[in-house]
Length: 318
Image (cartoon, rainbow, N blue to C red; front, side, top):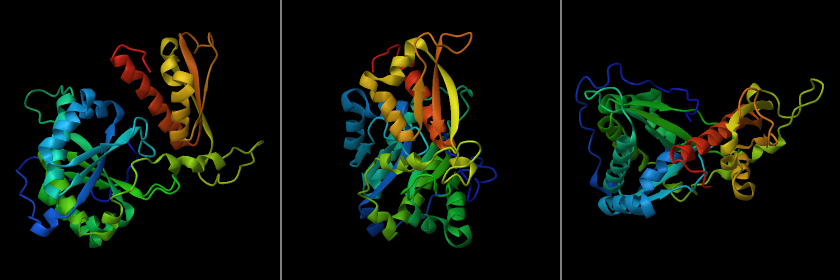
């Protein structure tokens, strides 16, 4: 699920037409500093990074020398249905590990653009809000130079105030693997010089508590708005989607585990129709999601992903 983003600066006019110049080399002291990088990965793709019995992630750690951690299943970045990968070590180790992970994710993509098309994907970094200024620079000078040097598209999302306590922003990189890796190198080398960045190194990967604000939003009766309903995003909305009857167990989970988890993470209320109560003309059960627009979107994405992820593997195991 893509977050709504506002570009600080856009991508270069003609990326990929020339080989990007090598980024400026950071000092040896900077390269040896303890560092980390966090980015998003879909719940389905996380499995390919972990590998059977953890074999792939263990191999990547061994090859790179970096430590690789993932948030737990259904611990998502607020407003998305994506898990968080955190890679820590020195800059060289981190860059090796990031490249291994991105290569793995690219290999999983089914590209239909032809043999001559170079694979392109989005990489969404998580950066503390207090550190974003160091990569933007005065008048956007630094981030513009990063775009020129890497030839990658770089966009910085605004801070999302819909999630209480969230102090991180998303930095989206677009381009080929080579262009993205150059951008990551430039951004990471700059971030390690920022004190806000180093202070966030031991921040937990879980963001579950940040959605607690949703419980105070309510709809007023007879047209009267309730508290906190001062903008469209915070008003209570309701959406009904259809889920095949044979897959409804995937949404509910054993003992209601899945539906409770989705509700807690998204902040939305979820109600499933009784057996036999289908969407007209289908065998799909009605799943009604209620909450703010953002909570509804997050819950809908989590439900869809849960069903499609299991369906692709031909199993209803929970």
